[in-house]
Picture (cartoon, rainbow, N blue to C red):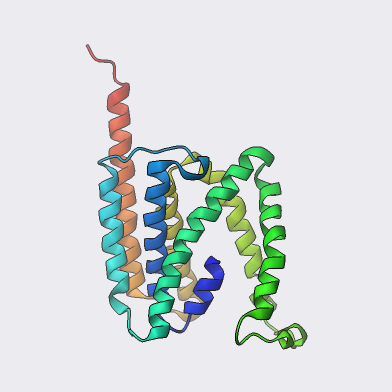
Length: 228
């Protein structure tokens, strides 16, 4: 669903807005999962230090949404779907993490894609504007455009390893920062330019994560010092 929703939104709102709204959806859902331990995940009680990450995250999201344009029906639907795609990311990575605890990371990644394949094929055939003719289309000379699934499979595999080890909220922010700065590097390589709005938004969120980690580490070290 996340990929489907974001593909629908592409062209209706900017890529920066898609990234920001997806992050917002992930942030809200992650905080709920951490607070209530849904789907059997470990609870992570809310800490005051987490406010730093939340404030910086919302500030970065706000900056990235400054280029949001359009209030027509397709744009509104796209905004809602991208927000839901962010929440769906948290749900499916949590489900995969639970399965990983039983069978391991690689088998979970295989099952995740194997189970999803028939469903996405069905959607591809019944979605409006989609024709079966794409099956007979002449392949593009740029073979690399067909390798997106490889990156997706690798991302699922890595998330299966990391999700059980850190809070859902921190997972969301670190995942986002990685996307932003890899995207900037790719833009510089392919187009010799990048979105300054995305850069500043990502920089602010990164600063929040960095400060949050430093403060929490300092507090943990203070707790470990024996009192006289």
